[in-house]
Amino acid sequence: GNSVTQMEGPVTLSEEAFLTINCTYTATGYPSLFWYVQYPGEGLQLLLKATKADDKGSNKGFEATYRKETTSFHLEKGSVQVSDSAVYFCALSTTSGSARQLTFGSGTQLTVLP
Amino acid sequence: EAGVTQFPSHSVIEKGQTVTLRCDPISGHDNLYWYRRVMGKEIKFLLHFVKESKQDESGMPNNRFLAERTGGTYSTLKVQPAELEDSGVYFCASSQDGVNNEQFFGPGTRLTVL
Image (cartoon, rainbow over all chains, first blue to last red; front, side, top):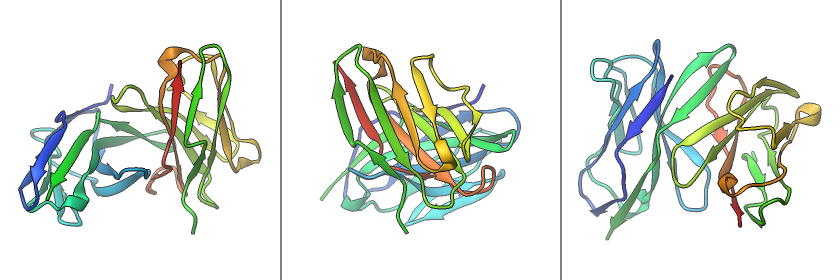
């Protein structure tokens, strides 16, 4: 079956530090890959996505590249801000019938200190 | 435009009691999904509605869980009777199209079973 393994947290960084959150996946076929973010008290928001190998998703300074050869989709940001403190979830989807089910990793809590 | 809303935000009940969670999707979204996150682990798919029909309920853990979406608008998820292991955060998501469109998530309902 499908699965997502992501770096366990919590992760604590100082403002302007470099961020990497590792994510690897197992899936049949050619999944789409996502990073979702959950800010305190809010729902999950789509941060970025990539739908095929070598695609790079980017948003708000965050980037992730779909690496089929290593089955990875690591999240990176060059300079984090306090406002980036949140829980980050890596996810994949495969089409099942007419639906796009999401399979999530366990989430990584990020805290950025001023 | 209002996002996905969930009610209540938090529910504390005793083992053996019944709880009903509600989700109001974004207006016009035919697809509605339920997910849950137990004990800080990965978010797992529970089921998917297309309008009022259950498209996929392969993730429902057992027959103590009953989901409905009468009239194809809001959905309810009833747990009866609740057990300790049902504690977690229950997320609802909706999308306009089941395959290509982004799923928009609600803030979740935190369920605590004592």
